Image (cartoon, rainbow, N blue to C red; front, top):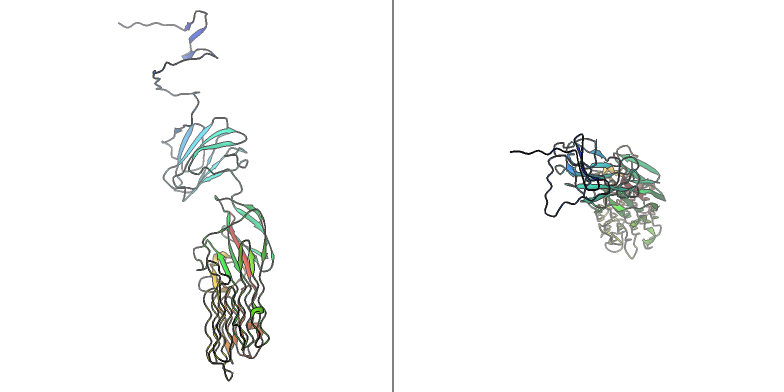
Length: 470
């Protein structure tokens, strides 16, 4: 036998409603009342809850994997699949306690990042108003709770807790004699002194370091002597094809002006028997990177040897015997900035004066022989994309890119001796024009030497700074 009791209201002895039924809506208690559920009791919910608030959890939408831009709803969690490309999660308008969770669906955020964008000018983790964050770590997930207008959405659970909303993702800067763009990268080129002014330092989600090429002035050649050494070559490139001298990491920058020094070439020797130290090229400088000027080539019949430098100058003919080349990578840095200059010929009587080849960033200088000067050593390179295909021609075109910091050719009785690829001047006999023996502008090449003539000037250096700007 089943009994049924039907009532609309249950009241206490003072006439206050305890339970009130109205149009299938059941109200338990009144505003201000305390409802106690005894310890050990179990509440079973077979329907949909509403108004209970949340404690850091969401309802995961497993039946709707997101693959394109959408607007999130507070209280929901989403699995996002970026295998087909990056997209954006637009957060709902913030209200205190609102909560949204996002999770990498199948470990693709590192290949195609996910953007999380707040509503209007709201913030994420107290960052810039309206600034978004990018999730770009494989398997990353994030839970955001809206607190207030000061902090906005706060990440309470995240693989990368340092993510902050920002609109300043990439490095931006001004300065240089020329600025070229190649894809998403921009390169500032300095052929003389100037200032690179960084107006935004960016962040790790976009770019916060720069690549660089810092080439010093090439060394002057000796009088009837050795070729000048190439200017110091120091570089960092994130391109696939890089020089063996490439530094392992980009250079961090901050919002400030960075003075740029572009080294001039060393002056050629004018007197037999005078040491070559005055013929060294000048240093080039950007931030903490200093490249040393190329060593001067040794003058004829001069004690003391050729000059050290970024790459060493070459030995000049002496009586008697061979003269050694100057030491490269001086002062030493890692990776090295250059190589040693070559020695002169061991037979230097009767006009058989063969000067050594100046050292280059890519190789040591060659040895002079009886009656023959040595060719200048090859320089080193940056990949073509460092400057881009539409840029003016800088450096010498070589097998791997644009070459700089080559050594100059040594003196010999007649004919010509090639300078190295990368701005090395031509060496040879007295009929070779001085303009061909001097290092060309802004390649940092050492000068070539000539028999029975004054030495020639090394080439000025160059500084380039490259960064991702979009």
